[in-house]
Length: 434
Image 1 (cartoon, rainbow, N blue to C red):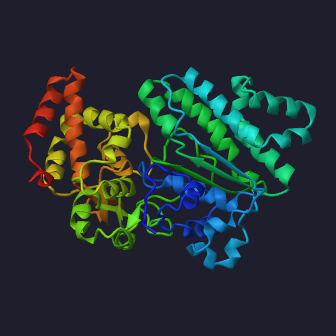
Image 2 (spheres, rainbow, N blue to C red):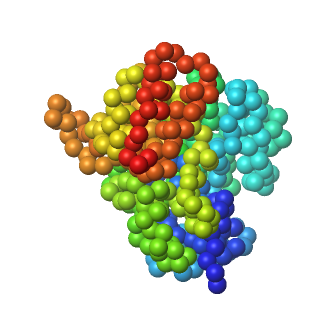
Image 3 (cartoon, rainbow, N blue to C red):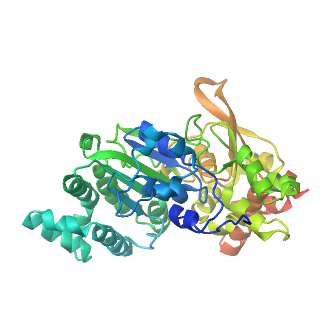
């Protein structure tokens, strides 16, 4: 049978049922079972987070029809002690990636609809509840609840599922920070942080140990200082900087690239793919951008070009770069000429420091997929401060910086300092342009 990618299919069951080409990441299931109660996994956009989260859902979720067939021939099937968990739990799965709105009022309206849909998935639970709880449950189902009832909606649904199914609950929350980034860009971040602190933080608190079996949260960033996760001493953050079992579970490794090139008979395109879409480093693994690679292979014999850049929201990156102004001009010169910088990276992003702290600029660019970080060393000037060699990963990301320049000119309201900065970008020829 001819191999076929399913571009845009990020539902695991749909991909398997349609015989789409699948790079086996099922050992992620083993790591979740063996891991902490709550795991936060930050990775750039389009690096396979949603596909992996739906894979977890179909593995763990108790359903009327067996889904064990989805995992036949997969790596996890070689571990019967883990396969015993297949189809055994109530699973609460929600993605926040489509809850981007330009005001808090519209966000709450969209959130009522999404949480209402989620509650309706578990509608039989309502019949077992006391009268007051049932009335509240049904208000949420009908999207008629007052705003304050949304704040505890995750916590209450977890409890309801536990008591109804007599099993601990698995919670999967995809792209948790997407509405937060949008809120920051649109001026209602404090309200959003308050909502997430109550909704997400309260729902996953450690004292709910018997009720919650595992929770997995994905996003781009680990957001700091807003205390969203401050009470979660059961939280494990699987940073892309860390060596560990999650490092090779998102994006394609060099070994997996060899499998793909052979499967699609495009081995002679290896150098082009390496130049354009290689260059990420997660926990010591060389990682390729999966969306870009798939898009390129599907488009052969068309020439390579930027694939991933057209799928991502760059607003926060643009804001951070432009706010940095002339202070980052020297460092950008080094990056654009193909050289490395050495800086510490913050594992938490403080939105109040956007444009104020250079470490925030490089940290945001790294976590968003615009920089590669390698060779961790303690700084000579501070033996307790870990620094990284930072560089532009590949030709596709080099074009992102040129896209930033065009964006700045299109904005039409550049200060003199920023105009100089942009002019410098236009005049500079980096290593990827040669």
